[in-house]
Image (cartoon, rainbow, N blue to C red):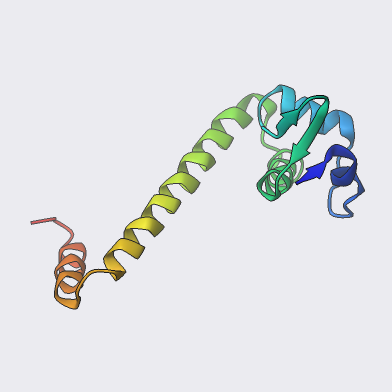
Length: 110
C-alpha cells in the first residue's frame, strides 16, 4: 500500500492532490483510511489512471463518470466471475468439459 505522498511521487501520476481528494470525495476512488492516513492499493493506482484517461483523454463528462465507472466495475466483476467459471470447468473430467463446450458452441443451452 502507498500513502498519498507516495502516490503523488509516482512519475506516471499526472494529477495533483486536490484532484485525487475530489475523486475520493465523489467516491470514484475508495482507498483505505486508517486514522488520518489514506492508503492506496495497486488497484487504486490503476483506477487513478483509468479515471484520468476517461476524464481528460476521452473527455467523459463529470456527470456521466459515475455511470461509466459503475458499468466498468460491473464488467470487471463479470470478467472475474467468468474466470472463476473457466477455472472450475478446467478442473472437471474431460467428458464433462466436452459437454460444457458443446453446450456453449450450440448457443441454445439445450
